[in-house]
Image (cartoon, rainbow, N blue to C red; front, side, top):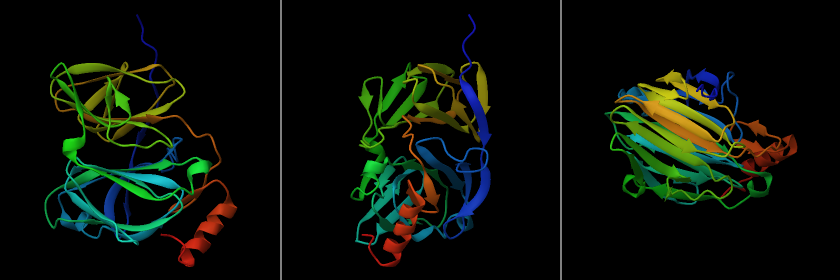
Length: 277
């Protein structure tokens, strides 16, 4: 029996720098994949060279979307303009709702060793763009793991898989965010809604999506189907992320993501006049 094709597009990220000079790879938010509604950006950062990450991300504003930082290795401290602070460590995740506006910084809390992780930007629907800012800082110990026949560990960061609910509460968009770690050859079927937009990003080894493979550094945009057929050999690792599209106009200028150009201009004015929290 021939399985239906599951991959619509394969994308490789572009090397770039952001913040004060942090070396990273931009996977979503580049010419080959400008966005995947509701996902606006996906960056992978990873280096054991301090000069690649020590400059960090000094104070900068956001409005109209959510930022997700998932640390695979290392420590990153965040602070904001109203005194909130937190530390994201290996295996931890921070889900920040920028909402109507926040000014924050994300700076390494290490001077040597490996720092690796992802930052994902998730758009907000118009009705939630001016919501109150908030953070969810989640420790690695609070992320549940589903074991698939002892050969595959699936960390449930957000959403629900196999009856296990992730610790992130993101009602506005309610994505599924899984981190899959293959300890030996294994396969799994992940249920999904056909109307959702999904991607799989391989960050170690290679993984099979249906009858096709993607290798380290490749992202697969998936076709609309009711399941994701995922497989891998020992050492393979990938994230699986999906959500229902918002299907609204997007006006974006740097750290501000709204629905109209007028709203972008208003964001600049509010920021310049100190109206962000």
